[in-house]
Image (cartoon, rainbow, N blue to C red):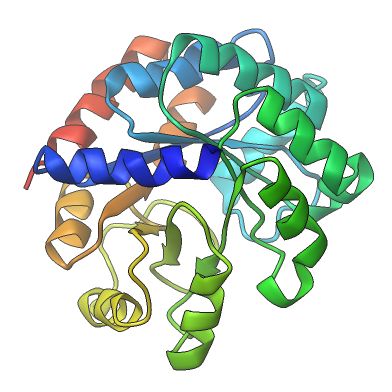
Length: 264
């Protein structure tokens, strides 16, 4: 089952004395032809799990860096079908679990059942849909389950108690912990209450916890792992490299630095 491969990636990292490094790039950026090479560079640099974005015209949770990547991808003709083909190409070359991250509208237009079937056939292991809360997710959750995909939900600094437990009960693979309010994007430092936030959510679930939003430097990765997280999600920093025209080798080098920071 796909989502089990995600959980196993976190377990394998833990057995090596490491945290898991979850890396994100927008599918189809800078263009569909080059995108698989950039995404494969994440695995070559040490990513334990890779998130591939599906570009959308109204990305409410994304900061300017990822928004710009979505615009580039859309202008280059990227569609959900394109991203699925990219995922299939990456899966052939990289053995790490793949998670598609996108908004619900394109999935509805595709059809939940058809989308999940196609994703599983392309080697995808999980889905993240940031604008879909668990109480509205039954059709997609059921379709994902039929095709072995993990539906990964997000918790925020506002999520507490029973709400955190309910979200975790619907999640497969890992729980995505949003470190701060607002959109994605690079930040100089982490929120001062990050340890308390991780500890509070840890008390609500046994799922692996991966912290994202604002994680862009090796010291950020070390800090969230030291605070009790199982993994760190890095996105905007990597997307920025693609946006300025850096070659795939630059991403491999950056990933090696970030991965080195996961060693406890």
